[in-house]
Image (cartoon, rainbow, N blue to C red; front, top):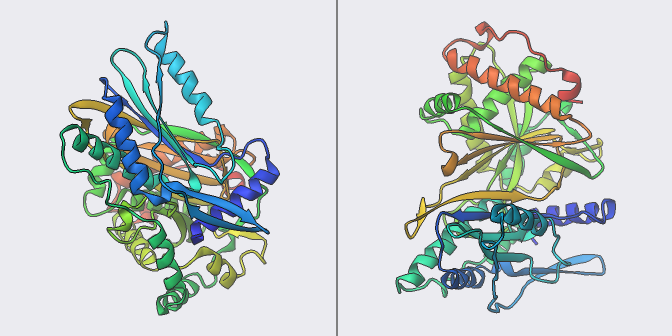
Length: 441
């Protein structure tokens, strides 16, 4: 198993013991088409996807306390079909089915850890739906899956050569990871992280929590603010580095600390080849950000962007080794940070064979090891509006506190954009209602 998979497996086993009746860890979503697709061709396209990607067919066995994974042999699957078009309220019935099915856990780990269905909602709408266990799949995989299946659909329909024989193997990633652990690059990466985090500020470290359920709260930035942010970022800044910069200044204001630790999620797919592989790659890395109030926000954000790029270059170093190096667990911490940022971007084709569609990602009620994660959702269908999804521990934050944080962050964004070439110390930031007592417990 990869380093990320081992972490996920440990997380799952701990949560099964803590919450035996609710240990779902799957990701999925659906595409809803404004027209009726060819369901037979879609089933063939799904089968090509399953056949090509061995990562989707991984299964797991636990023997004498050790977990082993293997690739199950490909067998043609018959995709379930549901028709709601004859109901009095088709959309309501579809929503009920969706909620019920997505709440179901997979039965054990030595079985298929994926499920697909095709649905006709009404006479004008059809749906492709899928869910896959997190051990075999991450958020980045969702976009890969959609693009592969839709591409195969078109090729089948118009008699083009199929990609069925073009296998995309997750197993190669496992081999590459083993090679890395014996390489000089590991020693170089170790040296970087131990130097970068020397004397790290422990205020931001995550205490070892019990397995805690989380709550999601989604907010939608208005069109005007989204446009201002994207215009500012068009000057060579990524949206991820923009929000990390804003959050760092926010923590600086609230906590009066100029040495900040924040987590940043990453796809962990370094090469062009890896960016086409379905599997559990995604992880997080620590960012240490030092605030110089004599810098302008523009200069500071550019500095943060370069900081992120530098850390990404060394990001292959396993987190469990870094935790040992820094004695994190011995100090009573489970992580170097309590707050993290995740950038979720999806840019599929706008239509399938002329039929327009929209996509929605789905998550189970799950658990987290940090108090709060802010997910920036930048999808094509919401191009004029960015979404901010706050994923937070329900025993740490109330929904009212999260809403207060969101409002303060929006206010700060507005002020910083208006004064991007003014030194941070000279920006009139006003009073902040947020309390240190619940931002960093």
